[in-house]
Image (cartoon, rainbow, N blue to C red; front, side, top):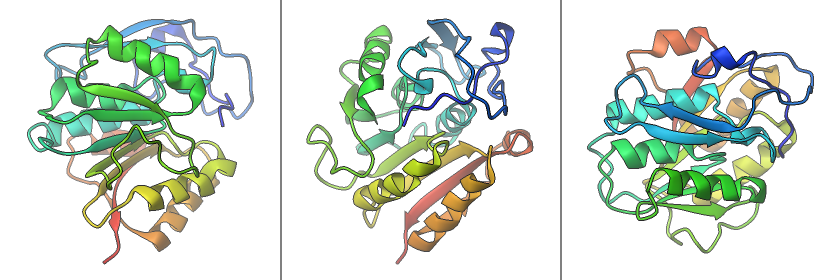
Length: 237
């Protein structure tokens, strides 16, 4: 699943939420491993420390939709997550889940998940931010049954950022969403459109779920101009 087809265009752009090339070739990653400090324009009083490392796949770096989704949740869900079971899919280094753990009021463990190549990076970033008591990393292959490490009940919230980038995995991601979505589950699904097939994923999702585009954010005009989309997905009733 980890096919690296996008690279940061320069080190100076590493802190830009939209500093991702749309070049559809597969050059070797040029971004070196290191720690990035992020406060999401002051939304975090304690900045997040994110170790980025591409040696095991492109999930190990910052991506635009992760920044957008994190800022949205910090603005709009800061006081609404107490008691909520939260699962992040395709977490990469864990940006979104860690941001929520640092900046929102939570009382249950946040489960950040990805494939095996990202597992050690997720654990490293949990430890780096001293969030071992609030965040847990798990291996979750899309299309497979949910891991036993996450609660057996349907989560209250699913977080997914930049999970739409590898078309052969689309059916697996759709199946995973179907497995996890309960009657009261809300999924915040954010991605940067790079190919026509990306919108095809959302077209298929709309046949399975209720899909509403999120519009109540001060930065919406900025991120839509950069082809980043944020949706709220729930079960059809």
